Image (tube, rainbow, N blue to C red; front, side):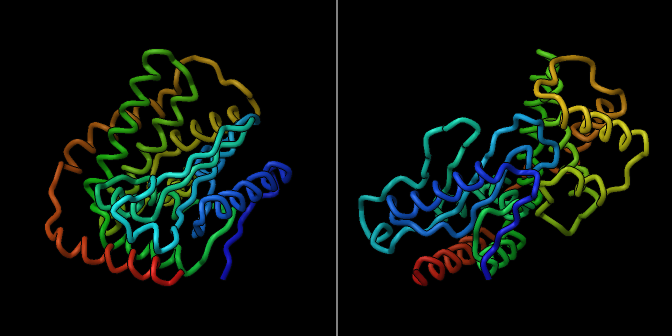
Length: 268
């Protein structure tokens, strides 16, 4: 089954340009785009009127590109064009980063906005991520990302950075409240809905989100108290709740990802 999920709020002209760019990538680079999603603030659930379109994709090359001592690049980057930002990873790169604890691929797999993709591929890759992703490493990814953005906010007071800190903090909270899971939703409203949170925080987030939705440039200012307290508390808690760890069974993780990669490349 082919995947396609585009909100009516997105500019159809820009969506058409993304479709054309993905077609061009497949044709010129001799690859198959297996999944292409929106990965920026539109998919996170807090876009501004002038938010970029951040299309990210996972692709598989032709078999001969993997059967050579001279491998090609494992990233395809297209030129920025206005609000358009379209880039992708080779499946092998995506799997290596997944195993290393990078949560980016996980987020692509949970994006609510899908430009194109194969439903079976996404389901199988989600299942694999659930098997091989290390909870602590994924959480440490969010902790590093969030504390960096929070530090930037404290230095320039840009309210945009508040959201870039809040979403990782919410992912950390979600992981703590779902101790059997390693894959957290990327969509901020979903994270909020699936956690036990005080009403004061939910109200503050709703007000700030509404402001961002109608303001082209949020500017700088003080962050609402409930949000600041939540962010700082979650980052402090995560340092203890998600310690640095080594994989307990690296051979199994490599075997599972290798099997998935071979199946996908040989099926082309």
